Image (cartoon, rainbow, N blue to C red; front, side):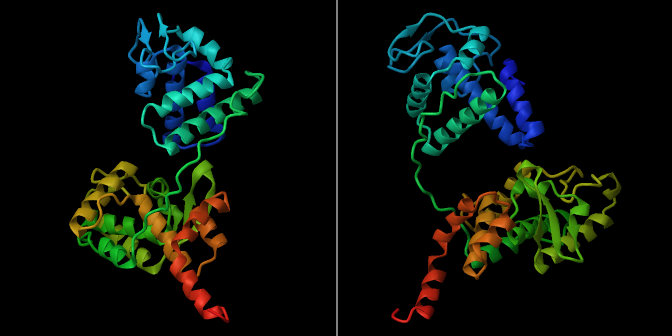
Length: 343
């Protein structure tokens, strides 16, 4: 936890009432710590995105001769002392729009991307919305602040040939190889997030109905169909797992476990993917999320409607899914040529 009761209350609200993932809550915590460091006049702490008290002490001074804002809210001045934790708690409740704008200007000097700045602003919006609902502040300091316009980046995806090459790389004659192939097959077959993949338990898989029960963001559950190839890969992995001499000591709930029998982590999935990308000679910048993008793109390219893909991905808003329509132009062109009388 932080050393600020108000922020701790907000983080507990995210985790226990909104059911945010630990990773998301951690990002919110880091963003708020950085904002507190900025309010305290601890520009070095704010540069590193860390709490001004993270080193166990407050810095004695903070200089902004380079023209960066200080705790006083005035660029190009010198702050003789970093604010105390008590003062920062008070300032956090009394923040004004001008201080938010100064914080935005500070972030702009730190080479953050527009998307990262937008995320940090979203954290502050959510925090002060929470504070207003609880009666801790009288007005929302970001009500008049507009989020910087972001670059529109199309998600990467793999062509079918690349997908086949990647998924055939793990050696499924070994337990760990069979696990990795099943893992990659399920990622592409269902489009689940990697966090949802590692959260799967044995009862979540319906082999007869060829579906899995997915616990998504906010603990919302959905049912996702699983292709026959992925089901076959899962069965082979589980057959090898059951025949392993150590299987009794494995986590009996987790579907995917590491070599020690513990539930696989998202970081481990990324490491395994990196290994197979190198072996297959594919772009090393591909991530587990690229398989999710690939799933959505190939579904739309092969005639699935946008609403169905939205449900399969577990997107709350259709606009989130619509980004994939930009990747399906070739299919739309074919449909146009076939259907329009004067094409």
